[in-house]
Image 1 (cartoon, rainbow, N blue to C red):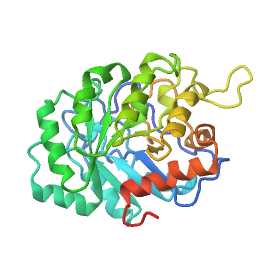
Image 2: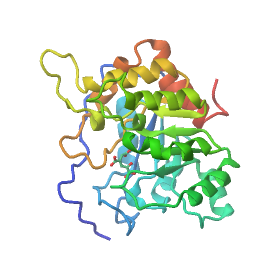
Image 3: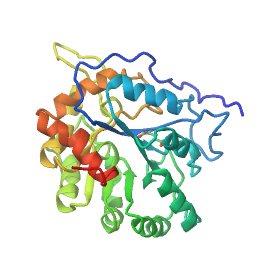
Length: 305
Ligand code: 0GY
C-alpha cells in the first residue's frame, strides 16, 4: 500500500556526523522507532500523521554508526496497536533490541505472552492529544495490571501542563513508570520554577518513576545552532536534563528519538545529539549509569551487572 506523507513532513537526517563523544561500551538507545516500511507494515487507519518510512535496517545502521550496542524500540502512534513492525525489528536484532508495545484492552493473554517472547518489555500510554484519541483510565489501569504480571513497565508520554490532572493516575500504576522526554517541560521557564519542581517532586516521591532525559531537539526553544558564543546546540535544555541526571542517577535513560516524528523546524543530526550527552551527564560514572547500567537493569535484567 502506498502512503502519502503528512504535509510538511521532515524526513530523518541521512548521513549523520560521527559523534565526538565516545559512548561507553554497551550503550543503549532507549527511545527510537521504526516506521513501516508502509508497503510491508501499513500505517494504522486511526493515525494522526503519516510519516516517511524508517526501517529496521536503517535504525540498526544508525545504531552502529553512533556506537550504540542496543536499542529499545518504542511503538509509534502511527502504527496504532499493531506492533508487527516493532516485533519484526526485534526478531532481526538478534537479542540486541527490546520493545515497548501499544495494546488494547481486548489483547489476549496469549498475545501478551507472544509479545513478551518477541522481546517486548512494556506498554506505552500516550496522553499527548495531538497524537492519540482518549482512552478511558480504567481501560489503561486494567492493561497495567495485566502487564505487571509479566514484569513489564509502563511508559508514559504527556505534556508538563497536564501533569496535575494525570498525577493521581500515574501514582496508582502498579509497575515501574518511565516518563518520556522529562515530561516535556517548557524550557523557557526556570529550572527551579513551579512547573519543573512539580516533575522533580513527582520523581522524588515515587521511587518507581524513571525519566528519559531525551529530546533536546523537541524541547529546545533556542534550537539546533549554538548562538552568541555558546559552544553547543540545545543549550537551554541542559539544566533540566542535568538536574534529573544528578538527582536521580539510577532512574534516568537516554534515547535518540530517531526518526524524530513531527518535528516542524529542523531535523537533528543524530551525531550532534550524542554530543549533547556529556553536557547533561558530566562524569564517566553518570554517563555509564545513564547509558548502560540503568537500561540494562530495566530491559536486560538477566544480563545486568
Ligand atoms: C516521540 C514523540 C512524538 C511522537 C510519538 O508515537 C509517536 O507518534 O511518540 C511526538 O510527536 O512528540 O517520542 O517520538
